[in-house]
Image 1 (cartoon, rainbow, N blue to C red):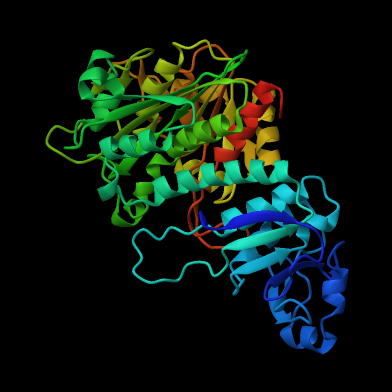
Image 2: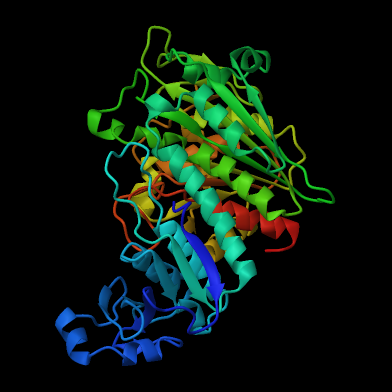
Length: 479
């Protein structure tokens, strides 16, 4: 993201010379509060020539009498937390000076500072580790007029945690083996108050994580399990997070087509989300115990790979007949959820790029929520709404459970039918989640953004990180 993008709170009229002034305009060219003078100083003929109408997503740069330039950003016909954040994201990519001054926090909206700051930081995100050019952001500082310092800090923590997840997912799988990713996470938790355990193959074998070992069998890179623990003084609630960490997914012997394999470095986005969120929760100092469990492995084709028809024994729960090795995420989550049951959790949440069926049902911008009951689902959706992420509850319809009965094991990993795939996968996970409150977040659709717009940048999205931080705030009593 822009680790080099500094956000500062300033008084109105402070140091406009040489800066880009960011002002908001609604559909119909109505300036939002705080932007009146900036818009009034623009020649109407220039606005007309630029074709600017204040529609959402529009950005136009025009001369300004005091600042170097005024950057007018369209908010559409509604001013909300989301439109302000999206406008800020659009704006930061259009700034061509080293410094900008944003008026958007003056709109009179609750938490406007946070919306502006998250838009700037998330919209300014760049993953440049493999680029040889020098096309970084032009801006290195944004002065936000009358910004709330506390909201700036909340935005910084949430955005940096999201950027961590984006970085980890965007990294090519050749450079993030299970062992190397675990080492990167170990470095990331230093100084945060988060403890880390990294389980190697002997420990995984000792713990009898048979489903994870079955998925890992075809790879020459050994699996890992990353366990993060945050234990602040005085916490009375415990949140347990489990994330799917398939470093690269070929589909195993049930091999994917080339087109479906292109983005499979993303298949560890769930693990990235729970690990990054735990770091964000710790940096906020939220008074809630958190345990994050991230099983990490490739799903590869090899001589020892699990075959269709093989039976796996997870650490806890039903034995599994594997009929399709490309339904592997639910297998490693069976072990992850089995480990989660060892903790006395007030809420367990798993996050996974689990099914294409969820994306078919909800599209590429909305994630699915399944839960042990509707109250838990609404708790997650409420947190997502505050975080600015889109989640929608789908039914955990028990009538489909019999479709995954197995003739030779307790359960099979696919139903064999064409329909209801996301529900069937959630029902499979429910077998391992225990009896306590539990939610399953299927982020297969929005884990990757296909275009840059607003606070979203093409590539890994980091979806669920901010929702999980907000959810932890709920349990801590600060949400």
